[in-house]
Image 1 (cartoon, rainbow, N blue to C red):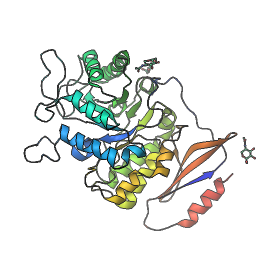
Image 2: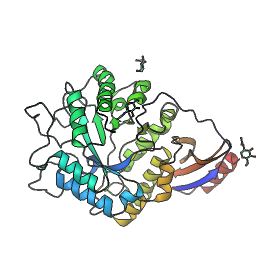
Image 3: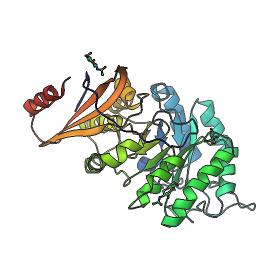
Image 4: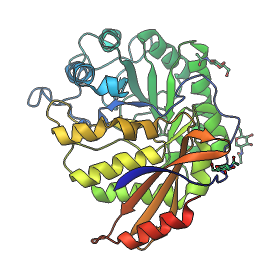
Length: 363
Ligand SMILES: *[C@@H]1O[C@H](CO)[C@@H](O)[C@H](O)[C@H]1NC(C)=O
Ligand SMILES: *[C@@H]1O[C@H](CO)[C@@H](O)[C@H](O)[C@H]1NC(C)=O
Ligand SMILES: *[C@@H]1O[C@H](CO)[C@@H](O)[C@H](O)[C@H]1NC(C)=O
C-alpha cells in the first residue's frame, strides 16, 4: 500500500447540503475509544489493569498527551459501553458504576480536560445499552442535560434495544436536546447501522458522524469487509460526507493483535482516503513503536484531515488491485490535487497495472 499525491483532471464530486450545522467536527474527529480493545471488561478484581474504569481512562489520557498522539491530532478520549451503574439515581439521572468510577464522571472529565483533551461518553438510544445498562429512551432531555453538566464534549449514541420508529424520532430529538444545552457536543450516531434503508437526509441533519456498517473486529477480514462495503456503496455514502458530517467505518484497530504491519498501514491509508474519523482503540501502554508511528504519520493524517472534507472513492478495481482517489487541497482553478491509495489484495506485485492506470488518468 502506497499513498502518493498527483494532480489529475477535475472530476465532479457531488456534495449534499442541508447538514447539521453546530460548528463542530469540521474535519473528521480523531481520538481514542475503549471498545474494540477493552470491550466490557468489568473485572477490576482480577484484571485491574484492563477493566473499564476511571484509572484506565486516566492512564490513556496521560499517554495521549505525553506520547505525541494529542500533537498528532488525536484530541478526544471516550468511554464506550459498560461505564454505567445498573440503576439510575434517585432523581432519575444516569450514574457511573461506583466501584470502577469512584470519583464520578465530572472529575474524570476535568482530568481529561486538564490533559488538553476532549471527553467523550457512550449511551444508547434504546431502553438499554447493548451490554444491558440503562438506555436514554424516556429520559432524552434529562440525559442530554446531565452530559452537558458533566463536561462531556462528544457522545456516541448506540442503537440497541430501539425500534426503527424510535430511532427515526429519537436521534433527532436527542440532538435537539444536546443543542438546547448550549454546550458544543459532537454527536456520533449509530442510527444507520441498525437500519436497512436509512433516511440519510434526516441523519446528516442531526449527527456529526454516523456508523453505517458492522462493528469492526480485530482482523484483516473485518477491515477488508468494511473497505468493500464503502467501495461497493460509495455512490450513496461518499456524497454524504463533508465538514461537520462524516461516515464512520469504525475504530482503528492498529497496534492490536489482528493486523500485520502492512495491513495496519492499509487501514490507516484507506480510512484517510475515506475521510473517516480516526478513533484508535489500542493499549497505548504497550503499543509497538512501528504501530505508533503509523498512527502518528503526519502525511497520512493530513490527507484524512484535508479541509475540503471530500470522501474519496474506489476509482478502479483491476484484478486484485484497487485504486482509491480522494480530492484534496490545494485546488488550482478547478483542478484538485488527489491523494491516491493503491491497494494490492493479491499475493504478487503487478506493477504494470498500476503504472498503466495512473498514466491513463494523468491530466
Ligand atoms: C444549535 O443549533 C444552531 C442552529 O443550527 C447552531 O447555530 C448552534 O451552533 C447549535 N448550538 C450548539 C451548542 O450545538
Ligand atoms: C427523511 O427525512 C426527511 C427529513 O427529516 C423527511 O423530510 C423525509 O420525509 C424523510 N423521508 C422518508 C422516506 O421518511
Ligand atoms: C487545470 O490545470 C491545467 C494545467 O495547469 C490548466 O491548463 C487548466 O486550464 C486547468 N483547468 C482549469 C479548469 O482551471
